[in-house]
Image (cartoon, rainbow, N blue to C red; front, side, top):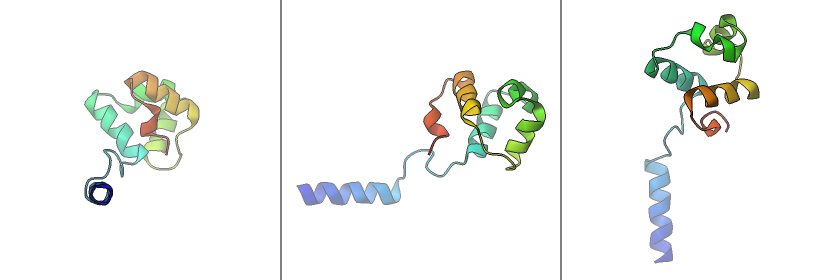
Length: 84
């Protein structure tokens, strides 16, 4: 039974990765913006300005801990989506 269980777990891990396994921070924020019908201006308070939102979405800047906390609070999601 132990071997069968281990084989099943390995198969699941290889063929069915966890949800969000390969989703980038940028894609996650874009998805959240689209699903809540928001623009970059709507996240300016979290990022410290619309220009910083743009820089993040263009891959020029990573998320800071403060921005992750702001996104967590605004969208009521776990910070685990952004912390890897």
